Image (cartoon, rainbow, N blue to C red; front, side):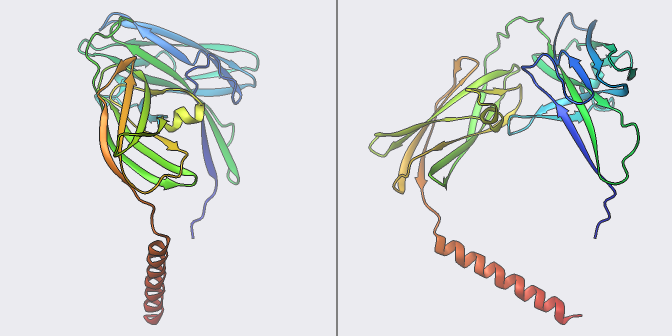
Length: 301
């Protein structure tokens, strides 16, 4: 058995649409900074940390990568990694001590490489320092991510062609209907909002139903569109709340990205309900196999 002394929980407060974070013992403002300026020159930035309680914070640079759910993944930056934004972003101070009711202004600079193109993301992570280590129980480390949205074109609209790809459509029977899912890949160098509509038609081309497909993040936020960042590949899904007769159908998927219509995805599919009897047989075989393995193991002791 494992001996666990304590459980460490990291809480990240990240809100692209919020200008102020009130979690934990500190308040951060703003949470999103738009970085624009000449390449190969220092572009200054700053944000404010206000203490609700006397304490210390550490500050580090993190890289942001959008994961398939549409949420943002955080990885600590590394100077050894040429792709890391820690090579672009520098901080004037890496730690601060702040008294209750007081505040500190965090300052730093971004240097956009001359060959950089498109839009990029980085994060300045502010982490509360624990006053003492918790040996038993739960230690909560609160982190606040200040997102840097770095625009290499100084805010000008990117005039390059939008390039996207939709692939790996699949469907499965769920309670009360059918769930469709697939992957949308933003091959462009700019972010954008994605609106996806799936149309299901019979072989006679009669419309059976329409559904909206979104990322998990968009469903959770109750947003109409999914935000997709440059180079990201996200899973989008939606449910058709109808019991449909099994058989062959055709699917048309219309993607609108950054207010531009993308190539229509078309595919013929077969809707099949998994047989409960087959599933029961498989489970029975699995159980017998496990019992046989256990008996063999006991017989060798």
